[in-house]
Amino acid sequence: MTRVKIDVTGAGIAVRCEACGGSLDERTSYVACPTCGALLEVVQTPPTARGRALQARFDDRLGVDALRGSAAARSGVWRYRELVLPNAGEAIASHPEGNTPLLERASITRFAGVESLGLKHEGHNPTGSFKDRGMTVAVTQARRIGASAVACASTGNTSASLAAYAAQAGIPALVLVPAGLVALGKLAQTIAYGARTLLVRGDFDDCLRLVREAADRLGVYLANSVNPFRIEGQKTIVFELLQQLGWEAPDWIALPAGNLGNTAAFGKALREAHELGLIARVPRLAAVQASGAAPFARAFAERFTTRHRVRAETVASAIRIGDPASWDRAVEAIRYTKGIVVAVDDEDIMEAKATIDASGVGCEPASAASVAGVRALVSRGEIAVGERVVAVLTGHVLKDPETLIREVGRDGSGSRWSRPIEIDAELAAVEEVLRASA
Ligand code: F0G
Image (tube, rainbow, N blue to C red; front, side, top):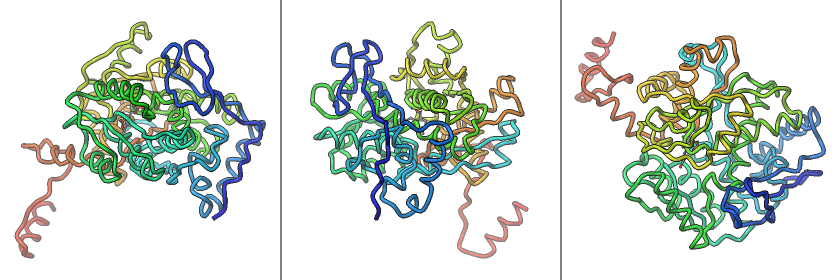
């Protein structure tokens, strides 16, 4: 296997406090400012190459090393390493991840009501969600600082991802999830990959508060998206979709929004891509929340004058979050991209999911929020029919089997999916079913 060539001329990072401006060493174990407590941010020293030269460099990396090089050379995160963590070198813990497809399905495009809809399917990542893109970077950083353990709070995908990457890096992982509120696939993965799993009697917001305290007091490295290195990895969803579009920016990028780490990452990615000349103009972000967990959408409608907190409830358990942690960064992302935040009902989310599932693509409920959001914004006239839209599908269809099975089992004709039929092991029974459904 060939090693990744560390060709990051001029690139580097600084870690800085977003509020007081204090700076920390690149190998810091802090994820919040030790002076004022605000979130930290990674500030990139850009590579010397820009514009077409930088595009060409990223395009050139899609050669044979992208198929048979080291994990980092094959990764759709580390392909952009000079914009992620330029000096990680040998410490990189990569599955690999990324390289997710940009799909198009006529039935979903029609459902959304636009002429062009790309689906960036992050469910194709190794643990089935976009979290792997941030986690490869956070766990790489955990290795660089010699962390003795890593921890996170989660609605399920972050914990599955952390468990997998921690296992690869040989670092013990502690995860806190809300008892009874995590989809089965995610819980099973987290346990399978060997994380110490705590089922907290409370919701996600309780878990996050608790794990932040625990990380502070117990000296474990926090891997939630408040960790600035997670954000650097998640930016590559945007870099990769732009590269897939030949560096021609779409008009809109729609994504589900919960704890707002991804919204923040997308804003940072677009700012950097534009400043580096990778794209000529900045797409608008459409951040989509579930109506029962929509403090950010409510604040958007009030021009972000107030930070809201709610007790969250939605079928989309991944985004059942009432007090999002990356609030300020996400406000900045929406403002910078002239974006929109919208809330959609659970019914609309499930209708979008049914359409995505029936096309053979499939996704978990929270992911379908992005397509439901596009449809809502088209019907409100915010997105024009002729605009080019990319919707991010954040998680795999297998993540949440119970929600689907529950829907299918609902009494009456309510189900949008066809209900399985139990039969005797006889040809006549098969024939009868075929006749009835003809
Ligand atoms: N979609 C899925 C499938 C998710 O798992 C999440 C977040 C989001 C969207 C929202 O992203 O929080 O960055 O706004 N899941 C976290 C978790 C909270 O613990 O797995 P966000």
